Image 1 (cartoon, rainbow, N blue to C red):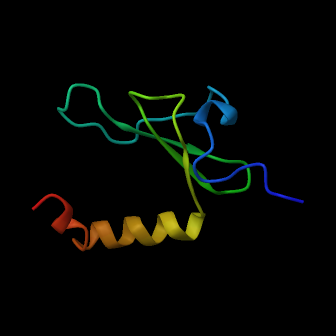
Image 2: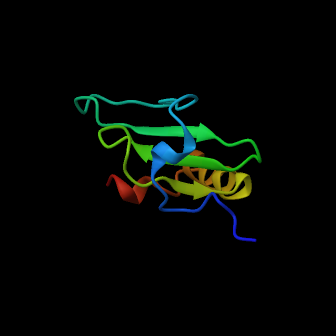
Length: 79
């Protein structure tokens, strides 16, 4: 059986409740929204396109990214 939740699926298929903006800048409201899924995975979507694609990451992938970002290893993205 195929997992009904997949990266690139329409974010609206994950429902409208539970999406959060854990961080926001002074960019005029363009933010990344996150939703924790029942199985522990995390969905991300663009706030300006809430019906657009959702990127799905495992808990381990999100934890790894956050740890690296906190350690400064993602600073090259904004340098």
